[in-house]
Amino acid sequence: MKNKHPYICFVAGLCTGFFSIYYIFYLYSSVAESLHFTLGNSNGVYYDRDVPRHIHSDEDRSVSANLSQNVRLLCWIMTGPKYLESRTKHIRATWGKRCSKILYMSSVETEFPTVGLNVTEGRDQLYWKTIRAFQYIYQHHRNDYDWVLKADDDTFVVIENLRHTLSKYDPQKPLYFGRRFAPFIKQGYMSGGAGYVLSKEALKRFIEGFDTGKCTHFSSLEDMALGQCMETMKVEPADSRDVKGRQTFHPYPPEKYLIKQPRSKRPWYVWYDHYEPRYGPECCSDNAVSFHYIYPVQMYTLQYFTYHLRPYGYKHRYNPDVAAAEVDSNITTSVSG
Image (cartoon, rainbow, N blue to C red; front, side, top):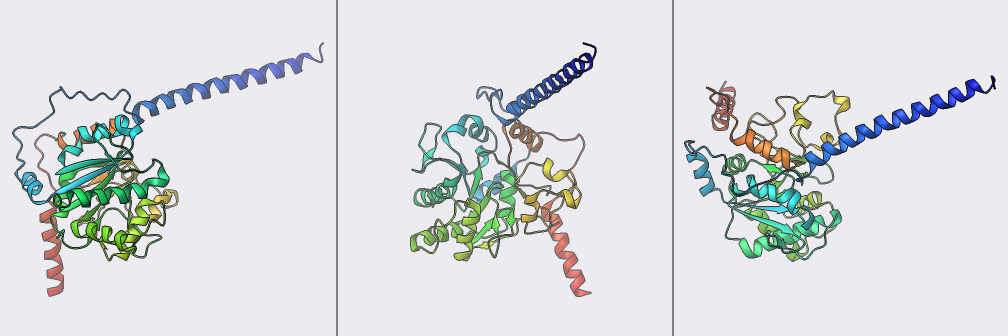
C-alpha cells in the first residue's frame, strides 16, 4: 500500500488540476460568449418608436439642409430575411433616415419593407444580389438620384459627410468612391464592407456593361467583381480621402485604426490598401464617412457620438473647405516661388 499511495495522490492531483482548469476555461468562455451575444446582436437592444428622439431644435442645420437638397443620394442596404431584426432595423432607426431615399435589398419581398431580388441568400450570391439591386434601381428610380450608395446591414454611415464629399464632383461623370483596395484589378476596387458610391453616369455604365456583355458575373467576390466592371466601363475610382490624406471610408470599426500598432503586427487587410495606411489619431478623417462591422449597440453609440456629444465651449477646429483652400494656397505659393 505504501508504494501505491504516491501514485494515487498523483492521479488525484492530476484530475483535480484538470477539472479546475476546465471549470475556469468554461466559465471564461461562457462570459465571453455572453458578452459577444449582447454586443453582437440586437437581442436586448430595444428600439421604441414612441420614445421622442434626441433632437437639438436650436441647432443650425442650414448647410446640411442645403446639401440634402442639392446632393440627391439614394442608399441601398444589402440585407437578408434573417438580419432584418438583428441588424437592418437599427439602420432604419439611425442613419438610414438621412438618405434622400433608402431601399432595403433582400432575396424576398417583406413588409419591412424589403425589395425582393429573386436571388438566393449566401455569401456566394452577393454579387448577383448587387447586380439585381443596381438593375432594379436603374429601372425604377433612375430619376430619383444623383449618387447611389451601397452599404451592408452592419455599416454605419455619416450621410452629411458623404454628401459634402460628393458635392465637389459632377454626378454626370463616371466616378465611384469608397475605400480603395489595390490587388486583383489594375486600377483597384472599392471595399464592399466600407460601402461605395456610384455616380449617376457610373451606374448607367454598369447597367450598359451587363446589357452588352462587357461585364459578367465572373466571381462571387462582390466588391472585386464590381471593380472589374468599373474598369472595363471606364469608370474612374475617385480619391475619397480628405485634404490631409486621411481616410473617410473604413472597412472595420474605429478601434481597428485608432490604436497604432507595430508594422510587423498589422492585420492582413492593411496590405490591401491602395494608399499608405495610417494608424493612431491621424488614421481617420474628422469628416469620416463610414465604418463596417458595426453591431446594434455600436450603431447607437456612434449615432450619439456623431450627432449629440459636444464638449462645452468648444468650436470645431476642422473645416474641410478652409483646409482645402489652405492647401491650394500653399501649392500656389510654392509654384510661384
